[in-house]
Length: 404
Image (cartoon, rainbow, N blue to C red):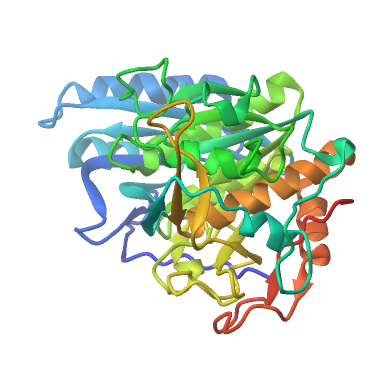
């Protein structure tokens, strides 16, 4: 079970005001904050606060702007708030509002991609490995039409998706750009990380769930980096979109940053709406509980393994990891053309294997809750195959055999 653990460098608290959670100087983004309301705030009260905020910002010495507003209404868990760029005096006034639960400094987030290991090599060892409990590898990956992910929407919260890639047929679409940085929306991905991840989820050659619908949610820029404020916007948009479409949904998060109470709460609230969130454990060979969204209690967090069932040397470890999946030397689609492919390594590549497996389960059993799907994934995993999984890590390797 994941512990309730938040690693915060500093907490500013003054009696009668909401706390401001801050990170060390090299982690926070100067003059940017995320404000979280009390979960039961009324819409009229929230509107009044936002009007108050805009009035106060007019007197700020820092050029001020509301970056995003967030609303995630999960069953038994809600997340409401906003991100803002402003000065300390404005934040002091904001924290005096009794409807504010707490605020946090905005932080950087990045894709969990370790390295490019080779180019244009079509290899499916990873699919072979999750289709059989023991080595040596087979030469085929099998699935049934009734459990190929069809009817399930998988939101790839990342750098976007090149929806026109031949791997996706007509099943992929560009959904939303939280960064407002995409110069060519028709291409959908200016970095390639999101397209690679989407290919592992549901590509016709490289994918686990070859019938799933793939929706790109861009929260990382061309550099592969981004901010927690944009990530929260993507998470909120995904939860709202899934509810409004009335579809069975999975979300993949092959990214992360320092441990963040704000991000973890947002993921928990989004899962409570009925969306299964799968997160990469991280590539620092450290405790996955020390990063977000990997440390979110409701996320299904994935470590990475190699072709010989070793834990990938970079993979984070610990009891926030739920399961391992192939993550070293993984071939998939790339954004440079409609036929491009490339091989990457990282927990970014492990996570979409599990997201694809979840889509396959949901295509056959759409009534399952995220908790039940997570239990299914863990129970169907093969035990004691990962060599040196790391202290506290579960020794479970993903299995997505023909009949799920």
